[in-house]
Amino acid sequence: MTFHKKHKLGFTTSRDKPLTSSPVCFRLDEELAQKLKSVPNWQERLREILPTLIEKWTAPL
Image (cartoon, rainbow, N blue to C red):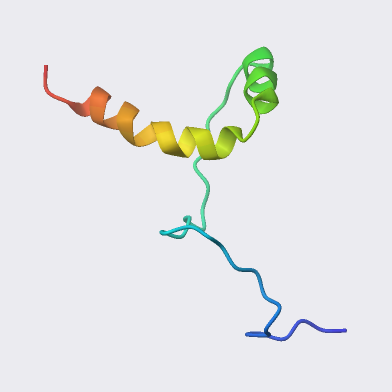
């Protein structure tokens, strides 16, 4: 069975803004990566805290 565009059973999201189509990637050491992945809902939690970190890091001293 082929996939038909705009079918009624398509994926929907509850997000206010859509995510980008290209991911941002960075390297971590093995231990830190495993710890991060063990945190429940880590991707969403990182998305929530990231704007605060960026604002903090880019604020003039």
